[in-house]
Length: 381
Image 1 (cartoon, rainbow, N blue to C red):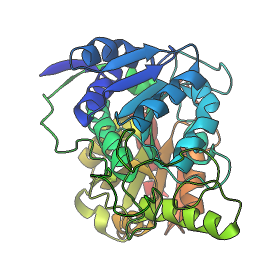
Image 2: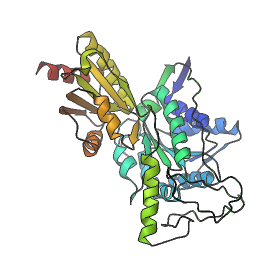
Image 3: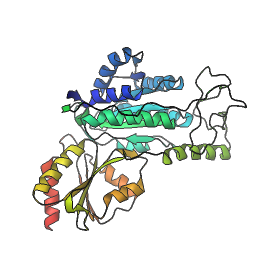
Image 4: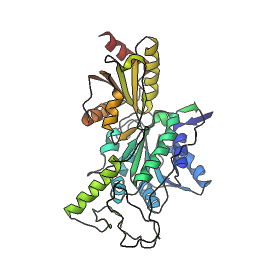
C-alpha cells in the first residue's frame, strides 16, 4: 500500500497520463504538486519550469503543448483568476492543457491554508465569450491520481483545456491507499501524419469536432494558432459564418465525446431506490464525509444513495437524472457559502422531488454527523 498526499497523487496522475512538461508558480496549497513533479519529470526526459508568475506559467505550458508535449500547470484560486485569458486562448487555438486548481478559501488572498469548494463558478464560467472546456474533480486522495490522468486524456483527445478542481483538504491530506492499478488512459492527440495532399485546414469541421493537429516542423502543416476568430485554415477572420463554424466545432467535440462511466461514482443502498428514498449529491473532498454518513445511516435503517460527480463540465443531464433514480428527496452537500454547486445543478436541469442543500464556507469542513442530522430530521418529518 502507498502513503501519499493528494498533491503527490495529482503529480503521479499527470505523469502516468503522459505529461512531460510542467510550468507553475508556487502557491499554497498547490506547491507540493510542483515539488513532486520536478524530480519525477527530470527522470523521464521531461522538465518543470518555475515561472515568474501564473500568467507566464500557463503560457509556457500552452507553448510546450503547441510543440507536442502534454503539459500541465498547477495553482490555487488567485492564480486561476490570472490564468483565465490564456485559458481562453487555449480554447480558441484548440491547444490541450491541464490546469490543476487546489482550491482554498477565497476571494482574494482568503484563507490560503484551509479548504473550500468556491472556485466552481470561475472554473466553469471564468473565460469571457463562449469557451467550452472540461472541468473534473477528484473524489478522494487516491482519486486525485485517476482523475488527473483522465484529465490529461480528455485534454489531449479533444485538444482543449481541462481544469482539475482539487482542494486543500485533498491536496495536503496524507492517506494510506491501495497501490493504484495501471490505467489505460494515456495522452493520445490526433496529429497530422505526413504531408497533406491539399492545403492543410487545421480547424476543419469533422464529424467529432476534432481535427488533426500539426506539430511544428510537419511538412505542409503550417498554420496560424492564436486567439483571433479564424477560418478552417487558421487565418484571422471577422466573418460571422467563420465565427459560428468554429464555435460549433468547439462545442461539438466537448458535447459529443464519450466519457464512459467515469463521470460520477454512483452508489445505491438498499431501499433507497424506492419512491421515498434519499439521494445525496456531492463532489470533491466531501465525498468521504458523505460516504461515512451513509454508512452510519444504513446501520440505523435509513437507506441513502450517493451521486458523487467527477465530471463537472460538460454536464451530462440525461445520465445525471437517471442516476437519481426514483429518489424524491435529494440533499446537495457542498463546501461553499453561496451554494455554487446547487445553483449549477438547478441551472442545468429540473431536479425531481424535494431538494435541500447543506452548504457552508470553509474553513470548518462539513462532518458526517452534520449530514446524518439533516437526513434524520428530514426522515422524521
